[in-house]
Length: 70
Image (cartoon, rainbow, N blue to C red; front, side):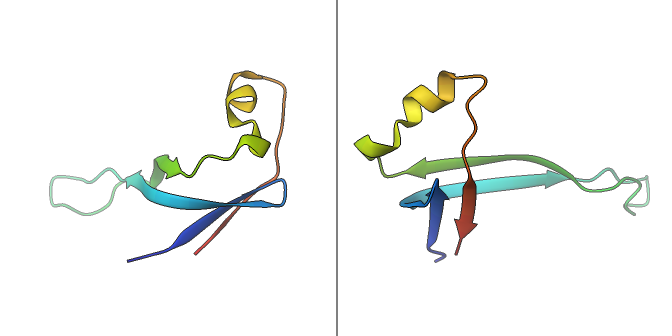
């Protein structure tokens, strides 16, 4: 099991679950024919009132400093 934390603006948040993915095209013989492409990251995190994640998710011009640790 991997334990992870998300750090947003210096505040640590426990990551309860995550998944991520990559895609890479292949030719008929199964050999890679394209570069790997990151296709997304999904997270379930503990909530905290002091983060205002809902406000941030709807603000198109608001930026946050984010780090990921395992």
